[in-house]
Length: 483
View 1 (cartoon, one colour):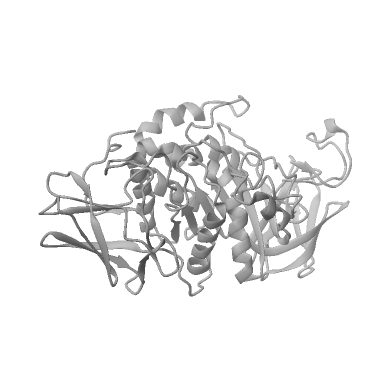
View 2: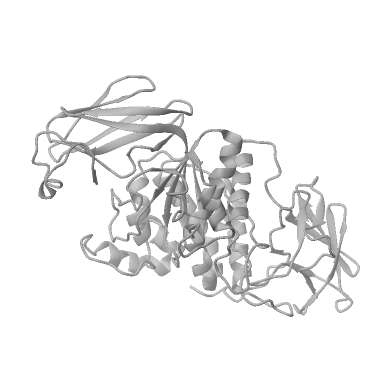
């Protein structure tokens, strides 16, 4: 908790043996953004047995609650349409005023290192010095969560930014680049304050970001979760890659916060268990929706970028299978996937181009969440038909214009017969279809596109957005039995 109201002796901070002071979590501070047209919860600590009141300046109504014997209190307040800045006054006998509060859109940004990757520091994204110098966006507010794991669900967290901060060249350098570029693009269209909560930890697996209740339903994790739940919260843990630890430490504290949606970039650490990810990813999405009590919570995520050495022949690949698992999660409603297959780097798992990552996530939000009539996704494979020695692929949406992103011949397609041996194929665009063939395969049955760790591929649409990797076959992959 963060001491807000008055200066107290350090030893008194957690005992609450004083007559009047208010302690608030780091998510309730000056400069914060509250989700518009929603019910937001205020909570904290104060002197036991008293009454606390909250008066927001947008309506000047007084909301009250009793403080229990342990000093806890909680008040839920409805927020108006986007606007501000406002003040919020809290009073338990002494007055505390939160200033520069905005009503807008709050997005929780989570995952591993490619979402964590800051503009500067270890990230040093493309044009980072220029981007930081131009980051004067006071209506983008940022909150960074300290890396924390725990065996038990936590109600509080520590902020690396000491609460909410306005986005500026002085504050943005160590913040998530992908999240920042997302907000910068959205705010151009929406003209509302955007609040970004950065809860990330590089090199982590998805099962650690999932609650104990949900992940224990997966048999392979059941015993581990039971052991973790028997571990005291006070015990210091060092390995974040255990089931539910990151959820407990970095997500559970925000369950009372009203949010608009989630931005997610993760999967690299699960690529060796890609088939299992088919189960784990939708499990986590539904878990968060349940925990936040928002069954239609928008969940926008980034498909893994290209990485590692380029294969000279068509091969099976764990990263391709992980991307397929990510694409399968689109079956869930209120989801969207930003394709990054064209912006990765051979020798760096952290692509420097986070501008396109953020922009593509923003396009998904503008179309799917804010209902703007734009092209937000590249071509998506729909179906295939075999015609003699060719396979004809069709894509959706049906009216999209297919093209190559570089103006050259189509690349990235492979074709196989019943022997399951793939050969690089000739591919041509015919309207909204792609016709694929090879002299090596007289009776084709399957096509794969961009199916590699680091594929060379160039199919896109008129907006320049890349097609997602896909395959027409369902032959078992190399991670099918990996748990």
